[in-house]
View 1: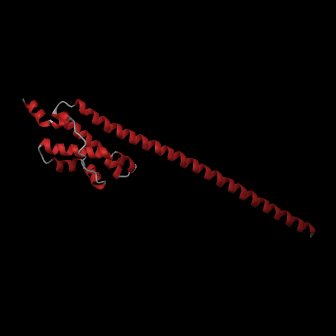
View 2: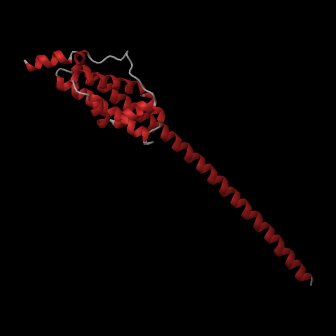
View 3: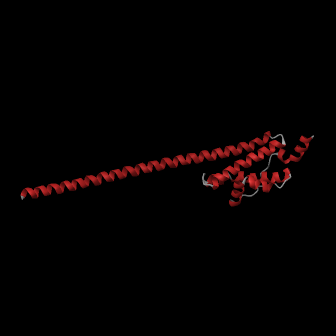
Length: 176
């Protein structure tokens, strides 16, 4: 009987020790997992920031490069290509923004470039001589939806390259 009582006591203390070990191991595992999740989250966040920064820099550089090409415009075809390339670029950015592929802040930051695009559309309407607005809405639908959604308006301080403003004269010179 004494042996049975001692055996029972020994089994009970082993069960208690085993449960304490199990709880300790589980707690340590949970703490390590939480730490790893925190490190992973921090790395993803930093990586995302870097990606957003690269996107913003890339879009800004692309649009600025397009604007800088205005100094090499020589022909009516150059002017039209410049306008089309510019509008294609802002339409792509608008598409990416509206489909949630880029953070909204990037497109908002580039809002002034969207406003400049409205000057190009206005130029097309006046210089090309057709109702270009209807054609433009078909060609660059994302751009127009973005401008409407974010209430982007023509900025009168944005100036098109002089050669584009003299488009009719340039056209006359090319035809002679």
